Image (cartoon, rainbow, N blue to C red; front, top):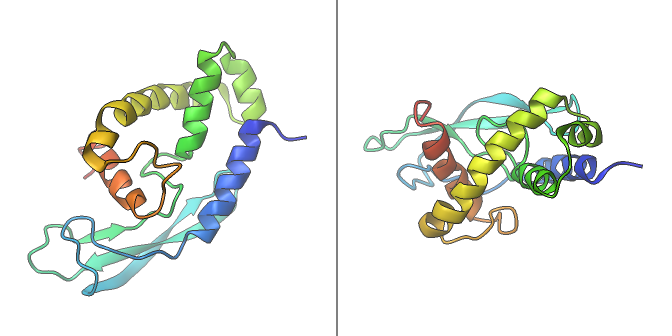
Length: 165
């Protein structure tokens, strides 16, 4: 019997496979028509060693400062290798008194990975409470992934990884 944490990882891997095709819009200028495919890269799914291809796109708008981008499907986050709902569930369980060792065992991840996830999750929680609702007008991108997911990942990238973007 799998634990709730492993179930989240399996479910989000399944969701990611289904969400590979979505409307592609340049996150910088909003261009929808002058975009071309510009290679791809592989991302690991959340529950094992399987990978999927993520399309890289080039914006041909000469006024746009962004050259290439990728539209990560829900529930992928930039740079992070775990889904948002997993991070928030881990944090919730840890705040209710579950030790790191138990969380590691139930998720199938190592202690250092769980500690890193908890650190990121606490920063993400404050970002969601303070900025995401104000900037994007959404309460939870996990519950409302539709059109707001790309905007959410873009805002998250600027806040958490400013040197990369």
